[in-house]
Image (cartoon, helix red, strand yellow):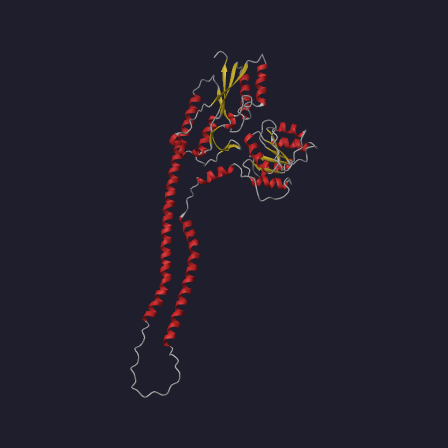
Length: 456
C-alpha cells in the first residue's frame, strides 16, 4: 500500500486505486493529486479489502483483471460489507462496451473509466461524486498521452480526392468573388454618375446678366458637334474590368487546383510505396515465424518444450502462464513422467511512449518505431526474482518441492533478453511502425516450459 503525499492547502478527500499495473496506478495518481486528493494505491483486491478494514476512502478506482480476486468480485465484497457499502466505486479498466458497463453498474459501480483516461473524464467523475467544491477554469497539466497523440497526428498523410479539392476551392473563392463583383458595380455606377455630371456641366450655358441689344452682326458658323466616342470607350473599359478580374481569379484558381492534384498524386504514390515496404517486412517476419515453428517441431519429442507469451505489464509467472504450467504438471503426472520441468522467463523489448516519472505505455500502432520514447521493458526490468512469480505460482512450486515422494521437480530461471525473432535494425527500422515492432516483442516476451526426463 503506497499512501500519497498531502499537498499543502489541498482538499482532504482520499482516493484508493486498486490495480496490478504500476504504470496505470502512477498515471491516475498524478491526475487525482492534481485536484488535491490524497491517493492510496493497492496492487491487488485482497490488499484493498485489508486496507478498507482500517481506512475509509471517499472513492475507489478498481481495475477488473487482476491476479487472484478480480474487480467484480471485489465490488461484491465491498458492497456486501455494511461498513464499506456506501463508498462509491469506479471501474478503471481496459474493458469496454455497453454490456460491461451494465454489469458493473448492476454490481454497484457508479461508472467506468478507460485505462487511456483523459483529464476531463477524471474531473467529471470527481464533480459528480461531489469531491470537488466548485468548477475551476484552471486544470492540471495534461496527461502523458498528449505526446502520443501528437506523434501519431504528425504521421498522418491524408489523401484528398479531386472532388473534395474542387468543392473546397469553390466554397472558399465564392464569397470573395461575390464581394468583388459588388464593389466593381459600385465603382462603375459612381464613375458613370461623375461622367454624367461633367457632361451636363459642359453643355449647360453659362448664366449672363441682361445687357443691351447688341448690334446686328453676321451669324457665326455653328460649332462642330462634340464627339462622344471617348465616353463610350471609357464606359466599355469600365464594364470589361470586372470580367478581366474574374478571369484572372479563375485562372489562379485552376492553377491552385492543378497543384493540389499533383500533390495528391505524389502523396498517393508515397503511401503506396510505404504499404509495399511494410508488406515486404511483414512477409519477412512471417517467414521467420515459420522457421521458428519448424525448428520447434524438429526438437526431440522427449524435450516437450512449450511457450506462452507474456503481455507487457503483466508478471511473467502468473495468469495464463500459471494455468499452462498446471496443465503440463497434470499431463506429466498422468503419463508417469519422472524428471524436471524447467521454467524459463525471457524479456521482450517493446516500443513505448511516456517517461520515467509518469510511467510508460504501449505506443499507437501507426506511430513510426523510430519515434518511440523507449524501446525496452522497464516494467520487467524493475521486477525482482520474487516479483516475477505470483503467490499462487510460488505456492505450487513449494508444494511440489515439499512432497519428497513426487517424482516431478520444478526449476525456475530468468534468461533475460534472448529474442527468437530478431528486431528490425538499420534501414528497416525507418520503415517499421510501432505495431509491427510490438508484434515481434510480444513473441520474444515469453515463458518457456521444458520437460526434461531424469537421466537425460
